[in-house]
Length: 248
Image 1 (cartoon, rainbow, N blue to C red):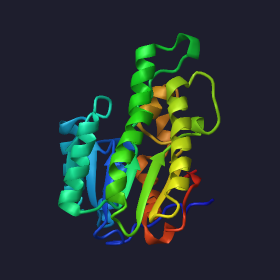
Image 2: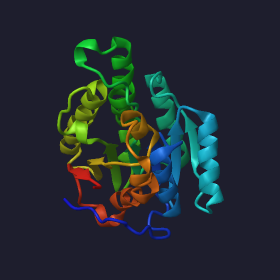
Image 3: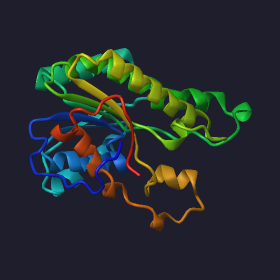
Image 4: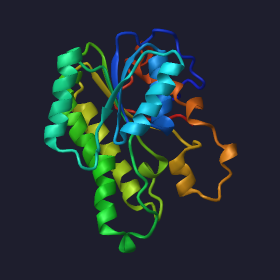
């Protein structure tokens, strides 16, 4: 389905919404957090590095947007107890969660499967797939307390069509697509909508690593695409469920 390009974020359109964004400290995650806060949402910015989260916090506040909440958590090493604590904190403070955006991911390395480093394979799958599974599982109780909740998984073209040498990253994104579709079926009779979205090419650190010879100046900045995420959290998109979406 087609998504609105250059969606204009409306002031307070997500007022009173509580939305958690993983990997919110930089790149597309920060751009998403900025737009959500601009729309009036309380954004829980989750990332593994506190200092970069504090920089991101300053960027949101200095722009005059709603003050976010920082939540440092290393998704690679997080335990069920850590996720339970997060659930408890969200329910205690807000009594619900209205949105969960799975943005955090690592590239791993690009090489043939028969040469792939096993330790790196495990860490990539842990951050990109297992952590979103656990985070979602523990936050579904908080999402069910919302009158209109959304779960959004950031995907990739290599998670929908196989491409050689993309290894664990590609496999993890294929896994996210399956996880999202399964959840959308299981949660069909609830007020939780689940979708995946491929943001396409962007001027990010991960893109530079994957395509070092590419002219980054020809690519759109993350903030040129992030407003579409606000649309998918808005009332206008309340009927979208179980879809594989793309910004490009």
